[in-house]
Length: 409
Image 1 (cartoon, one colour):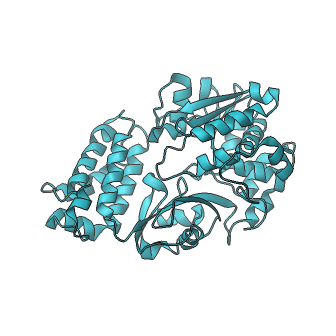
Image 2: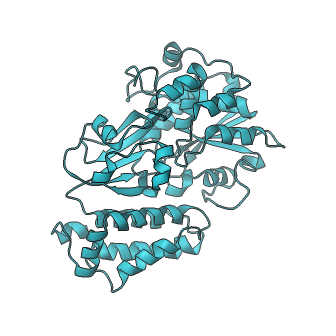
Image 3: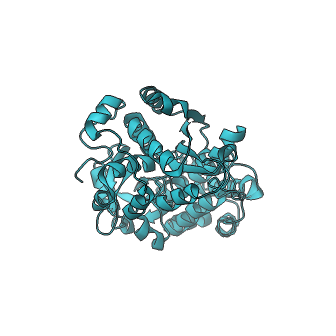
């Protein structure tokens, strides 16, 4: 990639970029064009928080909503355990995100901007406080910094709104949605921090420039956290349309043989390693395959790790981190996690494997929010990719790795 990308020109990953350095590198923030939402539409920018929703569509809906002036909610909660891209961006490029938020506020007519940052992301919080102190008095007056609870569901947009309004980070799948009635009852534009950083770059360089950064018909770049069978977990910036193989190579390459790749994080899907390398990291090509880049995670499972055990740990985490506001989360996910853990530990009950297969098919669409859907999707992919391992664990109480203690750990 060439040009002024999010992490271009050697900016360090250890200290935040100050306003003077930011302005020298990129120039002052240009005036927001009256047709900027059209510019976003032509850029083909999609949200980087997980859903990959077209950004221009979201902005236009909020801008055209009748009633009170909107609010912009900048989402930096990042509760996904395998993702570090948002905090890395917040720690090093806070002014780029502030620029994007300012553009969003002007474009949709918002008078208030709320920054919602994970409470444990201390370096990111510190960087944002310093960056806000460097901005104009007017921008400081209309900005509010809120620390988000470090729960998996707290970053979901309706949970973020609920927390800011009522102090409880519980998501909901029922109307009204945030764009209709969000913070203080106002229409609320919720955008991930990476999305807004891209917005700030598009405002400076244009939609054509952004489209040119992608590979093939893909547009723009994306931040990806690569972990697992690589030298070290790292955040890289790749052209959209890059293959998983190229992304792993950019992160230092494999340090061992790979069994599978988890794409998209804990709400993502497992892909068999041989099939994964040619998969392109672009929403348009991923969707027909039932895949998603999600929160920008590519986690490579080493060949000496058990897919059943790894999946059981993820399911236990998702059961523990649920909102606990409906039966599918409170009882369904807990039952799945318990059964999957027994299978992984070679101590499964009769019918455990059949039960989790059936339950995984029943959960989607039944919860008060999308948490059960994401967990079920992850499990269904594991049952497909690790089918032989699940059968060996569940029916023969054996692990192909030959190390029951490692499996049960």
